[in-house]
Image (cartoon, rainbow, N blue to C red):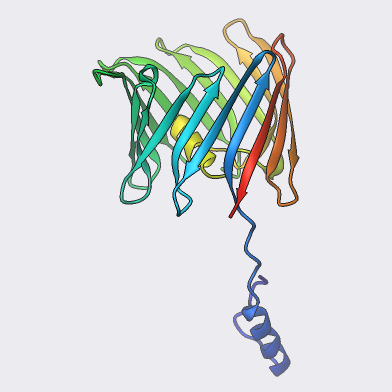
Length: 255
């Protein structure tokens, strides 16, 4: 919609302003991610989602090389996921806490069947990035990841990883396309934030990964295919090291 001026000086301009004011932008066509499938060499896995009548994710079903389980989500009165239960005891369960701004503040990971804490992660945010610090049940630091946003705050420019001793072990730098990230959609947007505290708005074009202290590097080059409404239907990741290419496909539910 055009920006309206405070005062329209002429009668004709007044008519023009009113017409402009009455015009509403067409709503964006939105989708829910129904399923994502991945193939890398001899490995393959899928993530599929179930929803309630309001379009809220109720379950995530994982199958294949990454493990077989069903994640069931519990939500608070604000609709935020506060607990994730797994039907496979190997994965325990997780609880989530939020700050006053609704951002993820803490993730707790518990084992089953006893329900003892395995680890927890504290998320802290600044204007230019955020930090995810991982602790053991006694409060000892296991390691942390420090993220720096791009100038517009929509994506991660740099990710630095540190071990328990505070020594940097890895650094990732990213470039982006102008298209929507294949994960910047529900319910993946929420799941990405629960897993790492943030979800990029744009699709990654490339990533350079430096392993420290040796300083060895490899790159990931990513390409995406989109449907007519701008949602990714396929992605491909090519690595410069010995890793096999990663091919992904996405199935959607139009809202």
